[in-house]
Amino acid sequence: MAVKERMDYIKKQLHSQSYKLTPQREATVEVLLENEEDHLSAEDVYLLVKDKAPEIGLATVYRTLELLNELEIVDKINFGDGVSRYDLRKEGANHSHHHLVCIQCGDVSEIEEDLLGEVEVKVEREWQFKIKDHRLTFHGVCSKCQREKDSTNEEVGRQTVDQL
Amino acid sequence: MAVKERMDYIKKQLHSQSYKLTPQREATVEVLLENEEDHLSAEDVYLLVKDKAPEIGLATVYRTLELLNELEIVDKINFGDGVSRYDLRKEGANHSHHHLVCIQCGDVSEIEEDLLGEVEVKVEREWQFKIKDHRLTFHGVCSKCQREKDSTNEEVGRQTVDQL
DNA sequence: ATACTAAACGATAATCATTATCGTTTTCAT
DNA sequence: ATGAAAACGATAATGATTATCGTTTAGTAT
Ligand SMILES: [Mn+2]
Ligand SMILES: [Mn+2]
Ligand SMILES: [Zn+2]
Ligand SMILES: [Zn+2]
Image (cartoon, rainbow over all chains, first blue to last red; front, top):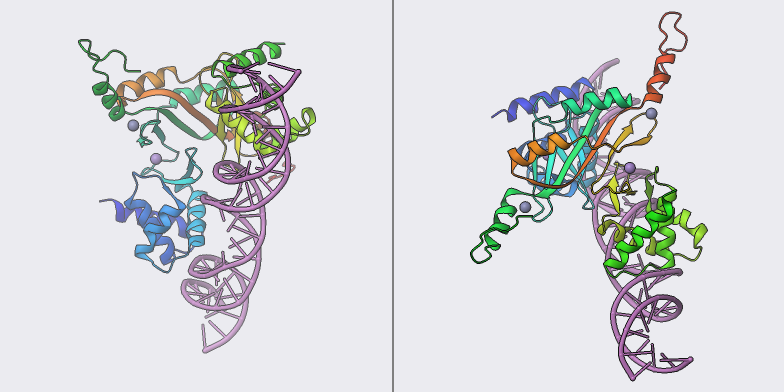
């Protein structure tokens, strides 16, 4: 697993900006690495990190996440529920990855591939805008929910009539 | 101006769902139409709409914006400052338009052109995800801020060195 | 026109995520 | 070992949004 190496790399990033790697910060990063698929809120991180460092305070979690965001180690994203969520950047990535949000089951999945190459070239050229980062989220129906809808819609002889 | 016609169309959308078009709702929509370029928070809308309907309450503004969002007349967006912003959909558009956010001056400008056609085809095919809508925001440096940076960076005679 | 009912409203209290404050602890260079 | 700065934990404050509730309005049936 590259967990150890990524931790080391993050340590270096902190040190290079002369930030200390406290036990609280290390535990927080560990939680983020161990839950990379998820999109945790500050409260979520707080509850998970308390297993490793029970004495940690919620304020410290917020402070740490804020710091990691400034260092561009995590992205702070917002899916429209009332909370910010913190998303570790993919290994080696220097920009935010994309998301698919299912409007039926709420599932959030990732697209690691950068789909915006050509689009960004066009935007930079035609809008004279120097792009530094992006946020791209698709809202729709995930494959699982599509299948469930299908098996529900077995209208007599005609099997699936319309799958939305 | 198409303002009148768009108001009529929105009236029809409300009525078709058997919602009443109250004076408060009408005043709110008017404010949105008159400030289409902007990205107003609920509070912003509240202050503007009070000119037209001084007795309106903030709760009603929130309720109206929520309703317009459900009817897909406005998009509720979040640029990372602590507030939701409400963005009227472009005339005839059935999806959210894109945004350019300048990380230096904070300016937000619009991209009405739908840049994601091919990307969405690919996502639907390769991720088996049925796309209903999207959110795309680019973060970077707007043309104005780039020009200011340029004229500042005249390294030869070196006038001013760095601003900010 | 009157009376009834549900929708909508205004005022304001409650909620809840996030931020600020402050006294204490830790880290690290001297 | 000493002192200053950085971090921390607890908790109060803030501020956007939502919920509540009594009143008003709009639409419909008498
Ligand atoms: Mn993600
Ligand atoms: Mn817009
Ligand atoms: Zn789903
Ligand atoms: Zn700018």
